[in-house]
Image 1 (tube, rainbow, N blue to C red):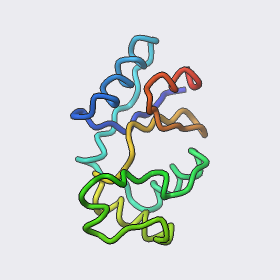
Image 2 (image 1 turned 60 degrees about the vertical axis):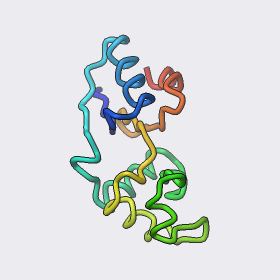
Image 3 (image 1 turned 180 degrees about the horizontal axis):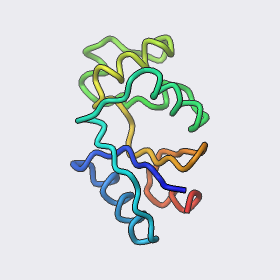
Length: 114
């Protein structure tokens, strides 16, 4: 089954995860989510596959987090909207294999999918 990596080439953890996949013989589909942002439906699907809340998809240290007034009390749907409009807020890297997914921070967590 072909893997997908939601990738930011400027992120060292994302680059490490991609290299780890390649080192293990995987040739994942690489989606540069900053160039091709996910819509709310795609983000909701990721939340289900990851088995986490939308809040756990957020990079809360990005300037956009505070600029948009996001908080732990922000409704899930509003979080997904914010990420779809401001993809820098999406935690990375995210690896998907079939119906399973994980946030590969640290990249060594990938071993669960390999």
